[in-house]
Image (cartoon, rainbow, N blue to C red; front, side, top):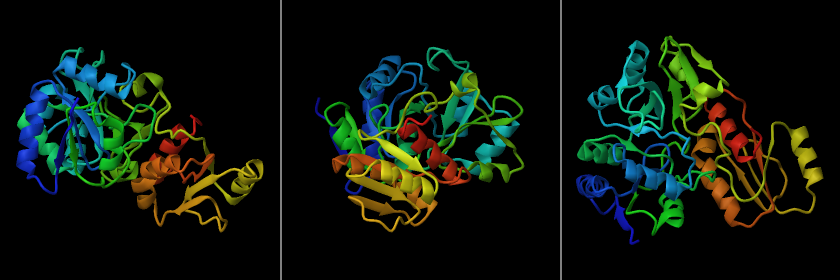
Length: 324
Protein backbone atom coordinates (compact mmCIF):
# COMPACT_ATOMS: atom_id res chain seq x y z
CA UNK A 1 0.00 0.00 0.00
CA UNK A 2 1.22 3.50 -0.85
CA UNK A 3 0.78 5.81 2.13
CA UNK A 4 -0.05 9.46 1.47
CA UNK A 5 2.03 11.80 3.65
CA UNK A 6 0.52 15.20 4.45
CA UNK A 7 2.88 17.79 5.96
CA UNK A 8 1.15 20.29 8.25
CA UNK A 9 3.91 22.86 7.67
CA UNK A 10 3.43 22.80 3.88
CA UNK A 11 -0.31 22.10 3.59
CA UNK A 12 -3.25 24.12 4.93
CA UNK A 13 -5.46 22.65 7.63
CA UNK A 14 -8.43 22.84 5.26
CA UNK A 15 -6.66 20.83 2.56
CA UNK A 16 -5.41 18.25 5.07
CA UNK A 17 -8.92 17.89 6.50
CA UNK A 18 -10.53 17.59 3.06
CA UNK A 19 -8.13 14.89 1.86
CA UNK A 20 -8.25 12.99 5.15
CA UNK A 21 -12.04 13.07 5.40
CA UNK A 22 -12.30 11.84 1.80
CA UNK A 23 -10.10 8.85 2.65
CA UNK A 24 -12.10 8.09 5.80
CA UNK A 25 -15.42 8.28 3.93
CA UNK A 26 -14.13 5.56 1.58
CA UNK A 27 -13.27 3.29 4.51
CA UNK A 28 -9.60 4.25 4.65
CA UNK A 29 -7.34 4.67 7.67
CA UNK A 30 -5.71 8.00 8.58
CA UNK A 31 -3.12 8.63 11.29
CA UNK A 32 -3.37 12.14 12.68
CA UNK A 33 -1.92 14.20 15.55
CA UNK A 34 -3.80 15.11 18.71
CA UNK A 35 -2.57 17.04 21.73
CA UNK A 36 -1.88 13.77 23.61
CA UNK A 37 -0.47 11.19 21.17
CA UNK A 38 -0.98 10.36 17.49
CA UNK A 39 -4.20 8.48 16.72
CA UNK A 40 -4.90 5.84 14.07
CA UNK A 41 -8.36 6.78 12.88
CA UNK A 42 -11.38 5.32 11.10
CA UNK A 43 -14.98 6.40 10.58
CA UNK A 44 -16.64 5.19 13.79
CA UNK A 45 -19.73 4.00 11.90
CA UNK A 46 -17.83 2.01 9.25
CA UNK A 47 -17.38 -1.35 10.96
CA UNK A 48 -15.11 -2.71 8.22
CA UNK A 49 -12.78 0.27 8.59
CA UNK A 50 -12.80 -0.07 12.38
CA UNK A 51 -11.88 -3.75 12.01
CA UNK A 52 -8.88 -2.63 9.94
CA UNK A 53 -7.68 -0.50 12.87
CA UNK A 54 -7.75 -3.52 15.19
CA UNK A 55 -5.95 -5.60 12.57
CA UNK A 56 -3.25 -3.02 11.77
CA UNK A 57 -2.56 -2.35 15.45
CA UNK A 58 -2.78 -6.05 16.37
CA UNK A 59 -5.21 -4.96 19.06
CA UNK A 60 -7.51 -7.26 21.03
CA UNK A 61 -11.16 -6.88 19.98
CA UNK A 62 -12.31 -6.59 23.61
CA UNK A 63 -10.23 -3.44 24.08
CA UNK A 64 -12.71 -0.60 23.28
CA UNK A 65 -11.93 2.52 21.26
CA UNK A 66 -12.60 6.18 22.01
CA UNK A 67 -15.02 8.16 19.82
CA UNK A 68 -13.43 11.51 18.90
CA UNK A 69 -16.02 14.23 18.29
CA UNK A 70 -16.12 17.76 16.94
CA UNK A 71 -19.08 19.32 18.77
CA UNK A 72 -21.51 18.88 21.65
CA UNK A 73 -24.22 18.15 19.08
CA UNK A 74 -22.18 15.18 17.88
CA UNK A 75 -21.85 13.97 21.49
CA UNK A 76 -25.61 14.21 22.05
CA UNK A 77 -26.22 11.97 19.03
CA UNK A 78 -24.20 9.10 20.50
CA UNK A 79 -24.31 9.41 24.29
CA UNK A 80 -26.47 10.53 27.21
CA UNK A 81 -25.05 13.70 28.78
CA UNK A 82 -25.89 14.12 32.47
CA UNK A 83 -25.13 17.06 34.77
CA UNK A 84 -21.66 15.84 35.77
CA UNK A 85 -20.76 15.35 32.11
CA UNK A 86 -22.00 18.86 31.22
CA UNK A 87 -19.88 20.40 33.96
CA UNK A 88 -16.75 18.52 32.89
CA UNK A 89 -17.30 19.20 29.17
CA UNK A 90 -17.72 22.94 29.77
CA UNK A 91 -14.47 23.15 31.73
CA UNK A 92 -12.13 20.75 29.98
CA UNK A 93 -13.18 20.28 26.34
CA UNK A 94 -11.56 20.35 23.95
CA UNK A 95 -8.72 18.70 25.86
CA UNK A 96 -7.05 15.51 27.10
CA UNK A 97 -10.08 14.09 28.89
CA UNK A 98 -12.31 11.19 27.81
CA UNK A 99 -15.70 10.67 29.43
CA UNK A 100 -17.66 7.43 29.45
CA UNK A 101 -21.38 7.93 28.88
CA UNK A 102 -24.42 5.70 28.50
CA UNK A 103 -24.58 4.91 24.79
CA UNK A 104 -27.42 5.84 22.45
CA UNK A 105 -26.14 3.81 19.50
CA UNK A 106 -26.14 0.16 18.45
CA UNK A 107 -23.74 -2.08 20.37
CA UNK A 108 -22.12 -3.16 17.11
CA UNK A 109 -20.44 0.27 17.12
CA UNK A 110 -19.51 0.22 20.82
CA UNK A 111 -17.78 -3.16 20.90
CA UNK A 112 -20.69 -4.82 22.69
CA UNK A 113 -20.86 -2.24 25.48
CA UNK A 114 -23.88 -0.21 26.58
CA UNK A 115 -21.50 2.66 27.30
CA UNK A 116 -19.40 4.83 24.99
CA UNK A 117 -16.07 6.59 25.57
CA UNK A 118 -15.98 10.07 24.01
CA UNK A 119 -13.51 12.93 23.79
CA UNK A 120 -12.98 16.20 21.91
CA UNK A 121 -9.28 16.58 21.02
CA UNK A 122 -7.52 19.91 21.46
CA UNK A 123 -5.91 19.86 18.04
CA UNK A 124 -7.14 21.91 15.07
CA UNK A 125 -6.18 19.27 12.48
CA UNK A 126 -8.02 16.52 14.35
CA UNK A 127 -11.12 18.67 14.90
CA UNK A 128 -11.27 19.78 11.27
CA UNK A 129 -11.03 16.19 10.01
CA UNK A 130 -13.91 15.12 12.26
CA UNK A 131 -15.96 18.14 11.17
CA UNK A 132 -15.37 17.41 7.48
CA UNK A 133 -16.17 13.71 7.92
CA UNK A 134 -19.40 14.48 9.74
CA UNK A 135 -19.07 11.39 11.94
CA UNK A 136 -17.06 10.63 15.06
CA UNK A 137 -13.66 9.04 14.48
CA UNK A 138 -12.46 6.10 16.56
CA UNK A 139 -8.75 6.60 17.07
CA UNK A 140 -6.62 4.57 19.46
CA UNK A 141 -2.98 5.55 19.87
CA UNK A 142 -0.92 4.99 16.74
CA UNK A 143 1.35 2.21 17.93
CA UNK A 144 1.50 -1.56 17.63
CA UNK A 145 -0.50 -2.79 20.62
CA UNK A 146 1.62 -3.27 23.70
CA UNK A 147 4.38 -0.95 22.48
CA UNK A 148 5.06 2.71 23.43
CA UNK A 149 2.59 5.19 21.97
CA UNK A 150 3.63 7.54 19.17
CA UNK A 151 4.27 11.16 20.05
CA UNK A 152 5.98 12.30 16.86
CA UNK A 153 5.81 11.69 13.11
CA UNK A 154 8.99 9.57 12.98
CA UNK A 155 7.47 6.99 15.34
CA UNK A 156 4.33 6.74 13.23
CA UNK A 157 6.22 6.57 9.94
CA UNK A 158 8.44 3.77 11.26
CA UNK A 159 5.52 1.67 12.50
CA UNK A 160 2.84 2.26 9.87
CA UNK A 161 4.18 3.49 6.53
CA UNK A 162 2.74 1.18 3.86
CA UNK A 163 0.06 -0.13 6.24
CA UNK A 164 -2.36 2.82 6.30
CA UNK A 165 -3.81 5.15 3.66
CA UNK A 166 -2.55 8.44 5.07
CA UNK A 167 -0.23 9.82 7.75
CA UNK A 168 -0.32 13.48 8.77
CA UNK A 169 2.91 15.00 10.03
CA UNK A 170 1.83 17.35 12.81
CA UNK A 171 5.15 17.46 14.65
CA UNK A 172 5.51 16.49 18.30
CA UNK A 173 2.43 16.18 20.49
CA UNK A 174 1.94 18.54 23.44
CA UNK A 175 1.31 16.21 26.38
CA UNK A 176 2.84 12.89 25.33
CA UNK A 177 0.47 10.77 27.45
CA UNK A 178 -3.01 9.61 26.47
CA UNK A 179 -6.19 11.21 27.79
CA UNK A 180 -7.58 10.68 31.26
CA UNK A 181 -10.71 8.49 31.19
CA UNK A 182 -13.56 9.25 33.63
CA UNK A 183 -16.79 7.26 33.85
CA UNK A 184 -19.75 9.59 34.48
CA UNK A 185 -22.60 7.18 33.73
CA UNK A 186 -23.86 7.37 37.32
CA UNK A 187 -24.00 10.12 39.93
CA UNK A 188 -20.29 9.77 40.69
CA UNK A 189 -17.19 10.34 38.57
CA UNK A 190 -14.96 7.26 38.47
CA UNK A 191 -11.36 7.22 37.21
CA UNK A 192 -10.86 4.38 34.73
CA UNK A 193 -7.47 5.48 33.33
CA UNK A 194 -5.15 8.23 34.58
CA UNK A 195 -3.86 10.50 31.85
CA UNK A 196 -2.69 13.95 30.84
CA UNK A 197 -5.35 15.74 32.89
CA UNK A 198 -4.78 15.29 36.64
CA UNK A 199 -7.87 14.24 38.59
CA UNK A 200 -7.03 16.98 41.08
CA UNK A 201 -8.01 19.49 38.35
CA UNK A 202 -11.41 17.83 37.98
CA UNK A 203 -11.94 17.84 41.73
CA UNK A 204 -11.46 21.63 41.76
CA UNK A 205 -14.95 21.74 40.19
CA UNK A 206 -16.37 20.16 43.34
CA UNK A 207 -16.59 16.73 41.68
CA UNK A 208 -15.13 13.90 43.74
CA UNK A 209 -13.27 11.44 41.52
CA UNK A 210 -13.33 7.86 42.76
CA UNK A 211 -10.39 5.60 41.92
CA UNK A 212 -11.56 2.07 41.15
CA UNK A 213 -10.03 -1.32 40.51
CA UNK A 214 -13.37 -2.81 39.45
CA UNK A 215 -12.70 -4.92 36.34
CA UNK A 216 -16.22 -4.56 34.93
CA UNK A 217 -15.97 -0.78 35.03
CA UNK A 218 -12.48 -0.72 33.56
CA UNK A 219 -13.69 -2.75 30.56
CA UNK A 220 -15.36 0.48 29.44
CA UNK A 221 -11.98 2.11 28.90
CA UNK A 222 -9.02 1.33 26.64
CA UNK A 223 -5.57 0.76 28.09
CA UNK A 224 -6.58 -0.91 31.36
CA UNK A 225 -6.36 -4.69 30.99
CA UNK A 226 -3.28 -5.55 28.96
CA UNK A 227 0.43 -4.91 29.05
CA UNK A 228 0.95 -1.58 27.30
CA UNK A 229 3.64 0.89 26.35
CA UNK A 230 6.45 -1.65 26.65
CA UNK A 231 9.75 -1.42 24.76
CA UNK A 232 11.52 -4.56 23.60
CA UNK A 233 14.01 -4.46 26.48
CA UNK A 234 13.11 -4.91 30.17
CA UNK A 235 12.06 -1.94 32.31
CA UNK A 236 12.83 -1.95 36.05
CA UNK A 237 11.34 0.72 38.30
CA UNK A 238 12.59 2.38 41.47
CA UNK A 239 11.18 4.95 43.89
CA UNK A 240 14.17 5.87 46.06
CA UNK A 241 17.97 5.82 46.13
CA UNK A 242 18.11 2.57 48.13
CA UNK A 243 16.03 0.72 45.53
CA UNK A 244 18.16 2.16 42.72
CA UNK A 245 21.40 0.99 44.32
CA UNK A 246 19.96 -2.50 44.79
CA UNK A 247 18.90 -2.68 41.13
CA UNK A 248 22.37 -1.59 40.04
CA UNK A 249 24.00 -4.21 42.26
CA UNK A 250 21.81 -6.93 40.72
CA UNK A 251 22.56 -5.81 37.16
CA UNK A 252 26.30 -5.23 37.14
CA UNK A 253 27.94 -5.31 33.72
CA UNK A 254 24.74 -4.57 31.79
CA UNK A 255 24.24 -1.72 29.32
CA UNK A 256 21.66 0.43 31.07
CA UNK A 257 19.50 3.39 30.07
CA UNK A 258 18.40 5.60 32.96
CA UNK A 259 15.38 7.94 33.04
CA UNK A 260 13.81 9.92 35.84
CA UNK A 261 13.55 13.16 37.81
CA UNK A 262 16.35 12.17 40.17
CA UNK A 263 19.94 12.74 39.03
CA UNK A 264 21.67 9.43 39.85
CA UNK A 265 25.16 11.02 39.79
CA UNK A 266 26.35 7.89 38.04
CA UNK A 267 27.43 7.15 34.50
CA UNK A 268 25.07 4.93 32.52
CA UNK A 269 25.18 3.94 28.88
CA UNK A 270 22.41 6.52 28.33
CA UNK A 271 21.05 8.94 30.94
CA UNK A 272 18.02 11.23 30.64
CA UNK A 273 17.03 13.39 33.62
CA UNK A 274 13.75 15.28 33.25
CA UNK A 275 13.37 18.81 34.61
CA UNK A 276 9.72 18.39 35.61
CA UNK A 277 6.80 15.97 35.67
CA UNK A 278 5.45 17.72 32.58
CA UNK A 279 8.68 17.01 30.69
CA UNK A 280 8.70 13.43 32.00
CA UNK A 281 5.18 12.89 30.64
CA UNK A 282 5.85 14.61 27.33
CA UNK A 283 9.03 12.61 26.68
CA UNK A 284 8.15 9.29 28.34
CA UNK A 285 7.23 7.27 25.25
CA UNK A 286 9.84 8.86 22.99
CA UNK A 287 12.53 8.06 25.59
CA UNK A 288 11.44 4.42 25.81
CA UNK A 289 11.62 4.22 22.01
CA UNK A 290 15.01 5.94 21.99
CA UNK A 291 16.45 3.51 24.53
CA UNK A 292 15.06 0.61 22.51
CA UNK A 293 16.96 1.81 19.46
CA UNK A 294 20.24 1.96 21.44
CA UNK A 295 20.30 -1.84 21.89
CA UNK A 296 20.60 -1.62 25.67
CA UNK A 297 20.14 -4.53 28.06
CA UNK A 298 17.91 -2.75 30.52
CA UNK A 299 15.99 0.45 31.27
CA UNK A 300 15.86 1.80 34.81
CA UNK A 301 13.07 4.33 35.37
CA UNK A 302 12.04 6.38 38.37
CA UNK A 303 8.45 5.85 39.49
CA UNK A 304 6.94 9.24 40.47
CA UNK A 305 4.56 9.73 43.36
CA UNK A 306 0.98 8.81 42.38
CA UNK A 307 -0.54 12.26 42.44
CA UNK A 308 -1.12 14.90 39.77
CA UNK A 309 0.52 13.99 36.48
CA UNK A 310 2.70 11.52 38.38
CA UNK A 311 -0.30 9.20 38.63
CA UNK A 312 -0.47 8.80 34.83
CA UNK A 313 3.31 8.49 34.41
CA UNK A 314 3.42 5.80 37.09
CA UNK A 315 0.54 3.93 35.43
CA UNK A 316 2.35 3.87 32.06
CA UNK A 317 5.66 2.81 33.60
CA UNK A 318 4.03 0.03 35.62
CA UNK A 319 2.37 -1.34 32.49
CA UNK A 320 5.59 -1.01 30.49
CA UNK A 321 7.45 -2.99 33.13
CA UNK A 322 4.79 -5.71 33.51
CA UNK A 323 4.44 -4.71 37.15
CA UNK A 324 0.62 -4.56 36.79
